[in-house]
Image 1 (cartoon, rainbow, N blue to C red):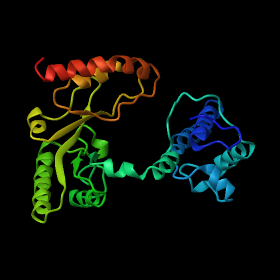
Image 2: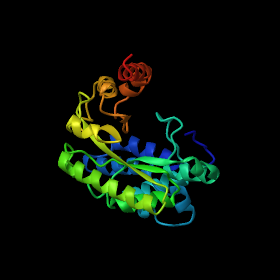
Image 3: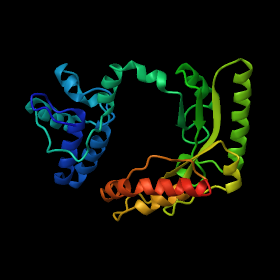
Length: 273
């Protein structure tokens, strides 16, 4: 994200400005600035475009009248933040513009390996997800509902996982009989503890086509968390490590430096090497 001083700030730059204001704001306003800063990356349209069209900024997520005035002020003054910590990071609005200029990328997408349904915290059933995948030209999807340890997301246990697998098999048979080219994979998003261990029985996991492992707890620890990610890579029950991210900067450098070796050792151990 390189600021262009002749243009008003982009959504990514507004996110940086909001983050900077968080540290200076009163306790009451800190949450408002923080939530808006996070949401700015997912605003579907550039805030500066709304201002140019004289449309209200309150239509953007987590922007109320107070923040609207602040953001309008930055846009009209063409105020830009200091060089950001994030490099080559595109907001949703920026990504859509770039992708619209390179339409061939869609034909290269063959599937989606992380999907939640109404079995946990999604809003559609498996058949509807498969229909939507077919409409997008996908060849396969993985149904990765949350596992039982994440009760806040209505995670499923081993019994429900077995029932869901039977439903997936039924959908595959139905679509196969009418020659719809889609394969629904029996999967799960396994909740990992800080030691990289999952919360489901190994036998249940072995019955699946794919296991995605993700951390959802103890995410605010301030010391380096590289070891937990390496432990997850060594977990023999998972094939994909989901959304590896951390709110503290120690992770990114050290994890980047050591992740390659961790992946190599993990792969070798799984191959018996």
